[in-house]
Length: 620
Image (cartoon, one colour):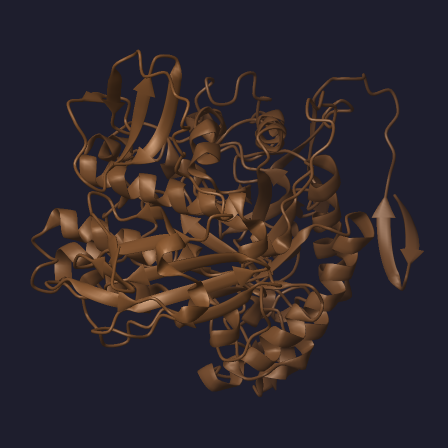
């Protein structure tokens, strides 16, 4: 065994001769002659206890665990000289600008699989089959919940053990590469969710030492939000590992950036105002205020990690789940970071039909405590938050709880208030068509069990109408990026109730106006501000499913819970204009947005109007 000292850290190494190219070799380490561990930098890890439950259809020709030579409890690494070889099909990919980013958060386990069941059997192949749907929805990136080798085969992924090895429960390493390749071919960026605050119990550095002697882990966490085994963030080798992880996934898998889980747990050990017991390697009971307070060490750590990312790829996305105060998040934003912004509670209040705490102004980062414009990825739902549709069904106001069409309409109005707000946003899988299975246990904690696969929801006209609402709104963002970037003029009024809500965006001569009626049981007229221009020149660009907005006397008439988006003539629309020279020799045939022919549209319905060989998407 040899060793080399680099920057004050001693690395032990050996070399092996005579290995055949393209052949799998399994190995593990025995530390001090007694502790069997895996390789923390392994590119593929075999699990003697769980791999046998992975179907050969998911992972064909999986390397065999050497059970005759090592206990099934020891993670075994696989070396293959050809492991990194992949024939990339998408030669170049231009990432969406940071300010235009709209991510679609995906848990591969529950996104595909057995329809109507909660079997947790989703795969990368199944996700690839749905990429055209995601592209047609109109988002420009996906955010994958953690995919690095985690405990077992059934997990959200926030219990990693090996950071360089993709988990086999969803597919092969080349399946992950193909997923990125296929996303890039469709213009979709790929962001990985990474967990640098904790691991499960099989990371080699966790197993190598008794906890009381560990330099890699804290026996107990100094911060208030720890769940599993807390990394010692002060250890330079731990930080070097993290930098290597980021570089590896950027180069070997060509991902487009990272979302960092629980950044509040990435501060220096002594930055939380806690007391350390060196004899036990433990910290005193952590406090919430001490954890939540402005923390310069967290900022410094993320700046250092971002620098490591920039060294490889200067344009890669760097997104923090810090959920801290504006001062700290603005410091991170000044380094080019994005920060998660959780608007779930207020979104649920609006969706349920309650005025209290229903302001959605925080979708716009300057209205979120003075955060820098374009610095937050705001969302109404995420994997951590309850489904709006569940809370409507369970706790909705009179006129909402037992009115399915109204529930879907109000969800569409939440979407409008989010997506018509400038800046980056995120949609959680199935949010766009009103998934309503609870994500929480009775005590309010996250229920991480597999969830129902509910694509058949789209067979319901109201759910399909909600999905089309998302498509129309996202199409407007895509067609008019200057209105939703950092340079447009924005008047955001999303905290009203009886008087309605509005957003007015302008850039050069372009004007876009969103009007929303928050009321449950009453139509209202929303005044068109003079800054929007002549009301008679405004065109309807998008509207709630099966509603009929109208402009009269300088106001927009909206049904209960509905929204409408109007724009000046030069705002590109998701709705087609019928040319004056269309061929009137052919009969007009109407189709709904699910492709089914209908006799005649109802007023305000968005349909496909076909005449001869010409087809247009129109509002009737």
